[in-house]
Image (cartoon, rainbow, N blue to C red; front, side):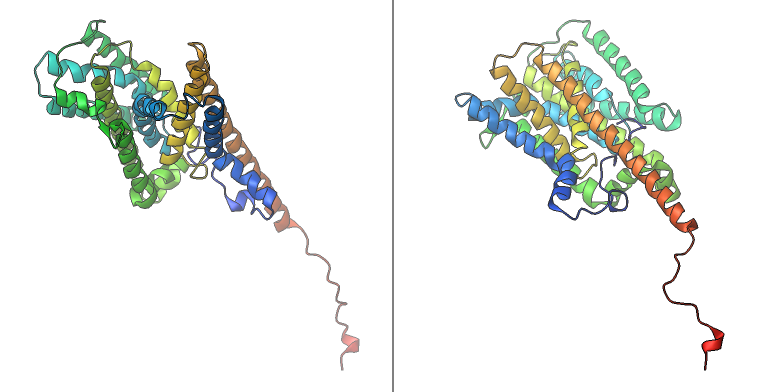
Length: 370
């Protein structure tokens, strides 16, 4: 979702799209919006039928939730700047440093794990501030700015680790952050649920959330209406950084080692999940539950394909193709919206200059009066 892609590109607008009057018209308008939800359910059902012994099992559910919880948090982190029409690539690059730092602070410096977690999240927030300054003050495109800072942060991770694994004795409390279970499910899934609920309440039911969506749709109009665009965009990058830092902590707790070769593979699926989120649940908007649906369809699809014996390259291929499809849908919808707006403006201009229609009533004759 770069600055050339509006955060409301797919959102239905009766003034532009027209009101659906028939059943087929309603289905046609609803398919791009809710089709991904039904596709996710259908895909899960298909794999359950084809792989009855392995796919529809509690073991497989636990594996998916444990494996994808970090990606889901990164996708939610990327969702926040996307609501404002920006993109944050450091969610993928940053987690490389954050998970290494979470371990090295404890094993090398002897910092207690609660303080180590707070330091990592604070550092991630500071990098969010840096991204916000580059995008809003220096006016650098968010894609370029976060690509640059992401590359720098990856270089810092390589320098800090020396290109080697960071290992050591970790306390039990830190390991339980990602390794514990609650109600028979991995605790990471409940982190995702809690973050999602908080983000949903803020984005859908508070003035802050409405301001973020207005900025994503039209930043100039938002500024004219008194919204502090710069402050809100910078805040979005800070929130994104904090979530990516928390994801790095969970990754460190789960892996129990830190290495610079781990983390970058999370960038693409996180962005895919956020992009797919703009096509479902909340009509056309980048939204929380849509992001989770996007992550779910990736998790279900990859899990099913791998259980069928898919090759090692299936996962990146699936992620890449899905990303292209999701961006293509959003771009097509935005072009369709722009075309519809231009057509309706032209129609109204023609109506305003058209001569009045002749009246069927004969003109009043003075001679016929009285």
